[in-house]
Image (cartoon, rainbow, N blue to C red; front, side, top):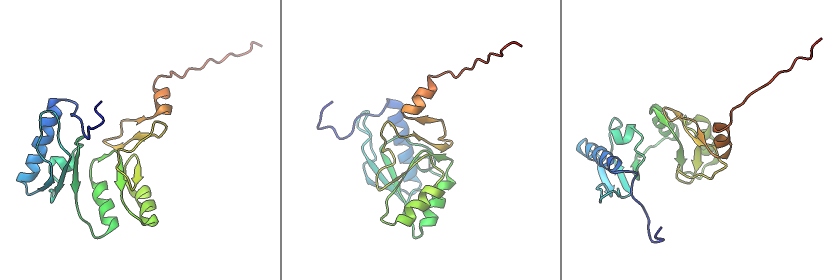
Length: 161
C-alpha cells in the first residue's frame, strides 16, 4: 500500500525460487543478465535477459515473474514465427510505429490478445483477457465472470392438444 513501492513480492517463496532457478539455468546456458536477476526475499526484481537459448525454461515456460527475454530480429515475420513456435500464447506486447505490422501481429500471433505499444499485461475489466494454446484456460473480464456464475437452463412447455 506504500505509494513509493515500484514492485511488490511474488505470490509465494516457491515462485521466487523457481524464477531464480530458471534465470540461473539460462545464464549457465549462455544468457546475459542486463538488469536484476537475483531475488531479495520474496521480491524478484525486474530482470532483463538477452542471448537466452529458446529451450531454456525462462524462455519456453510461462514465468509469471518480472522477467523479460529480449531477442533481436531483423524481420518482423521472423519475430512472429518465433512467438508462435512456443506452446503458450497468453498475451503479446508489440512495440511498433508501423500500422501494417500492428495488423499483421493481430492477425498472425497465436495469442489471446495483442497490445500495441504497451506491455502485454495491460488490461481493463471489460476487456476479455486470456490466452490460446496452453495458455487457453478461458477469459477474464466482466462478461466472462457473469458467464462463469450463470447456469443456463431451459424449460419447454408443449400446449396439449
